[in-house]
Length: 218
Image (cartoon, rainbow, N blue to C red):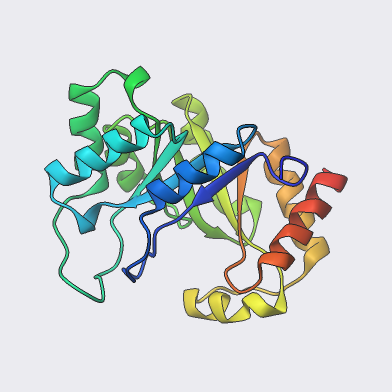
């Protein structure tokens, strides 16, 4: 797998569909792929603050490399707790040394919202992972903020595949599955020191194919 990607992000269901918690899935992957950086997401709304803190501690014990904190949509079963990602991270930073927790990321919007980002910076994240972008120019503003604060920026790209059109439509993206154009956008991001997270919800094979193309041409 290292020949295709350097890193894997195991995500929980944003829509709240019950599934094996991503922390445990990530830990199992880490055991068999020691050469990969393995991150996972944590839906904070699924837990009380105390429970979410315990989950993050479990991620550290299971040697997960990083955790993306997201609030998540209202779950299909049960109800949401008002445990916000920045609140949880502030508690973690006040109680645990950085060496005792994985790298912790917060989500970032594509549309410029400096007030939101400045608020999240107070929680001292290790970086931001963006919503799906369609061009490198969309996050120039965020790149500059991350550089000024010496934190990582990871841009999310929807793999250009006809099979992924339903996801693009659901997100309201003005998007065409143009492989060559997206390769150029990805290369632009990498030249700016921005990492890339690929998502291909409707075709794993198309995601792998795109990742191989990007690595070959990068």
